[in-house]
Image 1 (cartoon, helix red, strand yellow):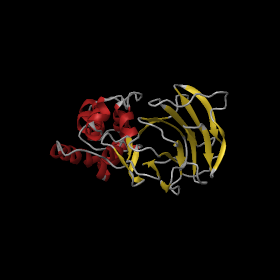
Image 2: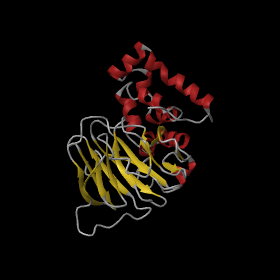
Image 3: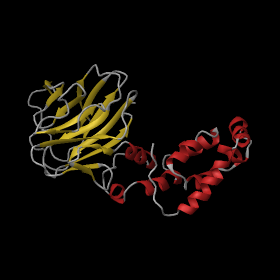
Image 4: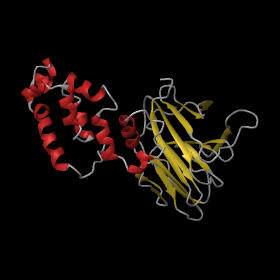
Length: 291
């Protein structure tokens, strides 16, 4: 994962980094701390370690968590500790922290994780850009174009959930779902880009159709007079790579499994849009509420 830190306080973080690196890089110190917990680092009080760790970036914290059980417990015991609060303040935009974008995330660590799983600025259509908050896609008003974006990280195992919502008109096509790295993120015309080939699976919120391999795979949700999507309504997407399924929730109401038999490949959360100046926000939540 790529750390994203500001320049403020860099000299202090540098000194803290060197202090922590000693037991990590020194074979003797590292082995002593990891093996018996009797090294200097292993004897430091948790509060002292927390203060030192609060100056480090994510990649450095990942290394520190491998030093010994004491350091690991200090880092992962409290997801709202000063370590994660400080990193969150340095990594995330103020807009993301002061608005309700991340309101369904319970901790600072979860907010950092969500940022790591947000839309990629390097893996989207040239007609869209990711806003400064780091979580919202803005589609420019380009005629006769369908434009999409994938997240920075995909999944080939485990169970994962994320929220998606539109902050503007849907237009004639507005699709949420998943895609492989091979799926295109831009095409001519106004089409359902996600689901247009065998590399993506999507739910068109405009007409409640499921799409894959260029075909309509039925309506969704499977009920009479299913309500249409309302602007601002958060849809929860649940990807289960163990059961190879993709499901959706609306307002904590489980709508059912939309796709089964997903391939054992790396799949990325994705969206595609056609309406000019519409905005779509995606926030990774972690494991589904049922585990």
